[in-house]
Length: 331
Length: 287
Image (cartoon, rainbow over all chains, first blue to last red; front, side, top):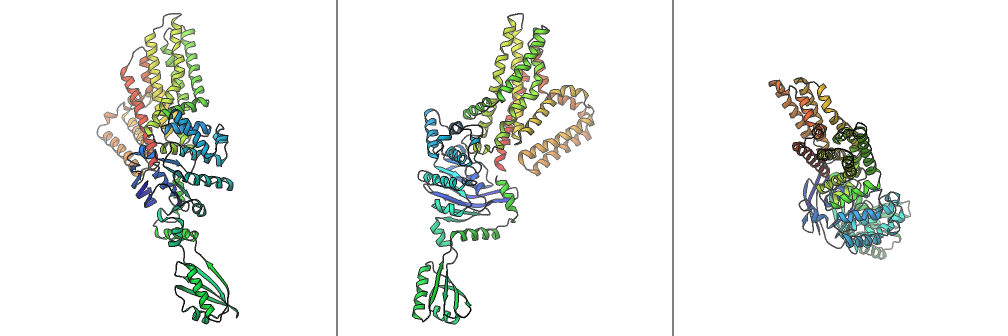
């Protein structure tokens, strides 16, 4: 559906997007995740034809966005970071204009405008001035605009930023709803949000694509090493004797709390942390020692996200203070 | 293009802009007609256009200042970039809407010569020739206004620059009498113009090397020409000011001559500035 090949964008000297390539297939909700200034908006602006690329290619259903912009743009509905709304108009007037510009006429135009108004739930404000609407409604009008012309792909740039919690939930529900009929790509810097509604995640940091996959897969392959925290009455020597026979232990660090307890942090080499914990449990059962407490600490995507963002920072040549500038540029 | 045109027209007629523009034009032409045709009982309607052309200094910037600057300010230019229409179509749609807003009061004005002819001898052909020239000259000024609006996101700035430029153009004929016709004066002025050109180029492209390059090359060429053959610059500045004056060419029509070269000149000015506006908008994609 969308294929991005070796996309690179320089703002003057500053490298905003660094050789990013990925393929997006039909019928998923994609989350574009990255900290502020990572190059999310820049990448989206290039995919939608609003910005030129320094190098690389973007194909929308086989149409090159730079060579055949009109054919490619017809397949995309885009909501930029700031909803591009004419404040003095009503949503109805605004949507009719966008529909016409997308080539809709007459009955088709009216039908589609009504349909998107219905879908985004703005029927009760459609005749008010846009400037008088709340932020949540403005965002909805922006999404409605993107839906006109029935594009195959909907691209939303940080659609939930600046909304109150109830509005955020409503917009998320709307995105999930849209995901059933369209391919949706939306960006966010909040991991939980992306995890909640996406079935594919693209992580971008410092202009580089650092991870791409479905949330479980990312969790499995990228997650920080799992850890078992164990409290026992065995001394440190006894503990190492007991665990010596257990396989897949990545390392143990332990400390003795007074005379009574030893607290051990056992790292797992195995993907399946439960297999390790039952092995340890059995080893203790065979000995004469007691486990007072055993806690499994699973790595989560949040850690991965932070780690990847940080590691990209050390890899990238751009100085950290460039990030502020890139954010300004993105806008 | 039609969508942009309709949208722009709705914006003009929903706000006061179109009405203020029309009212100013009608009032000024009305005053002119009263002074020349009614009070002084001159039968040439052409003189009214000569008198009222000054109003363009105010009304053209008022009408054109928001055209592109406002889109930038509201960030709606992003929408225009993302829609499946080309930048040329956007500019053409906007420009045609401006022309329609301008044509509306002119249609009312077009009835005046006919009305006057009921009460005396009015030479209709020169009247309408002058009206056509008046329309095309206004259209050329509007193309200039669109371009100025595309340079900034600040409407006030666009209006200010627009007024300054059009005012300068209006007075350039009278000023040409007073500016230095010496070779040195012309050379210095051209140097300053090269610098201004470099600045505008830099605003458009954000390419420092190229802007400095062009600006400095122009200045070097001027300097070299001046050094080797200063006679070339003799009287160049006043000449140039007369050539660039849009208002000067209107006078030919006022005097009852239908000057086709002037029409071609106005049309080239329109095409030139619309082309620059498209480039200005297109450049935004690159930085």
